[in-house]
Image (spheres, rainbow, N blue to C red):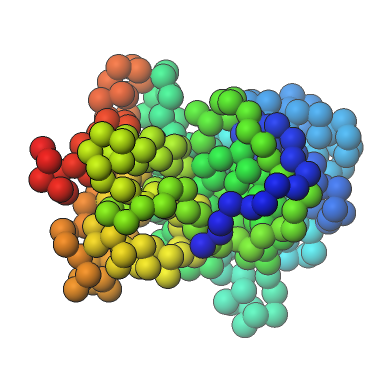
Length: 337
């Protein structure tokens, strides 16, 4: 499990600017890195994340593409097999479904079908999550689909520091990586980000809050809500929750989670995806099986009900797990509700 790093050279960056800084470092340190996608180059990205990178590195390395996710990912697989390290932006994760064949049947299979003689070190950057006004085709959380596929690494950064570190880790990895950002985090408060540290491996969970009574595991935008719920549980209910940010759900840090659950004897899984078929189901099954003797209560999941996401903010608020909902779910495990 990755522990918080000691102070070093840090700058105050928002989540979006941390991604931009990571892209700049990747383009600077590896000449074989290229960056492309819809509106990535001259416009600087629909969310401003790739701003100024084309001006700094030129149109041969940072460029715009036609609206064809299949073409983008097909070209990336070929480029990666020929020695480049493409970073491809898919504007919304919903649109990645158009390129499912290239991701699942091609990129994830390169190493296996070549008997290890070839690799496809490409990174897919995308974002997901529900925000006011996002419709049913722009609000899905699809990480479980991709975590199901052997050969892919899947990460969901929750902080500006991880937005920086995990993108660099993906670009350095020799496996195809899917880094799923959350647009609700892009332009939030700035935080200190270390920009001179060594590149991490594309794996490992992060301890957010230490505790002894209950483990809450989450990823992406739900991590901060889980942290706030954990602090409220300690302050108001006397329940000391341990909050773990899974960060990389493929490969998943099972060792870190098992150690935490065997200590706390209770596990609550929180994610923004629909409950049925969400990655929380895999976690629940594995922990229920592997830590059965240590569990004081059955593993519990909290996610979005199995409905399409409405655009109205007040309806989204009802569906997406809130700090209060996470706290209440934890309290129910202690029969406090």
